[in-house]
Image (cartoon, rainbow, N blue to C red; front, side, top):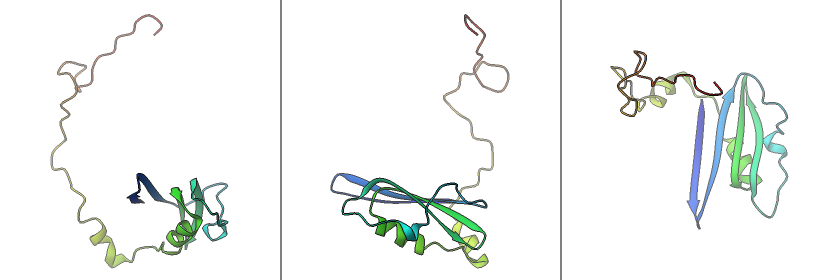
Length: 119
């Protein structure tokens, strides 16, 4: 699972991206230990654990306090919330036909790429 939070204003776009894993991300400091700074960092990375879920947070143009607050708000959804989380995900009933591939190819619609010089 992943989520991205975006804030825009003053000509800049600030983001915090959360990604989950069953394994801890190597070399990430705990979000609670991020040092404060007078200026937002171009990129901040940290991690938080919730049970057996490891969450990596990647912030762009945000302060350490924002990252800590995002990490504090991370929680594992309850079973009764899962259906609501995925209600807006469209489920394709038929294969999606791409209009940007040529009609000829090797039967699957992909273009042929015959070997040439150097290949």
